[in-house]
Length: 255
Image 1 (tube, rainbow, N blue to C red):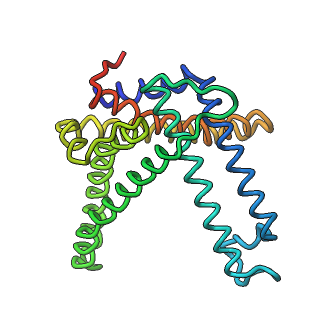
Image 2 (cartoon, rainbow, N blue to C red):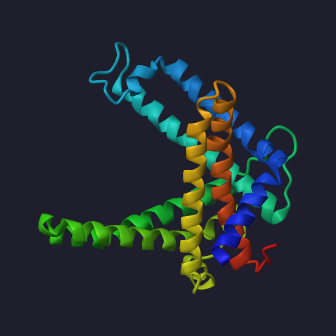
């Protein structure tokens, strides 16, 4: 039941440290929002320009300004996300408590985190190529078999991603490990990780169902939806990586 224990421990970490969760997330999220709003205002781009149904750019808006906007949006999103993740990993693994209204901005660790996240993404895309070629070879006549194989292979790759994901918290704390080390340290736990993924997925489904029910409550429902959807659930996902690093690399016991 290692997968279940990792999930429960990750949830407990978040709910047991709500003060630190707010300290780590609120400031970066606010700064990211200000940057995004500021770029919108500076470039004079209305929100309608990003509407997927829009055919032409609004008057006075150039393709170059939209490119700059998209670039800044992505940069702000990733910097905010990785700033929060690095700060959380360091808080849990190194007891680096946040002070003040902002967690420490460690550009070198954020950059290292981004580099490893990008490396994992590229690796997964490359690994998916054989499945795409196989599906194309099977053709429409064996579409059912192709779908089954693609689902199975996708699950396999997600498990592989989680096995390798312990390089992320390692980068955050400045004690990097290689992909081969991560793979070796997580040998024999694919079943536990699969269970972890299933439990985490079911948990998110239940939370989403709860949001649907709470939507009938005008103010409280919206507040809880925002609180869980944009804060708690992402932090639980980050905590899963943190817990896996603690278990498989530092050999910590799960209480």
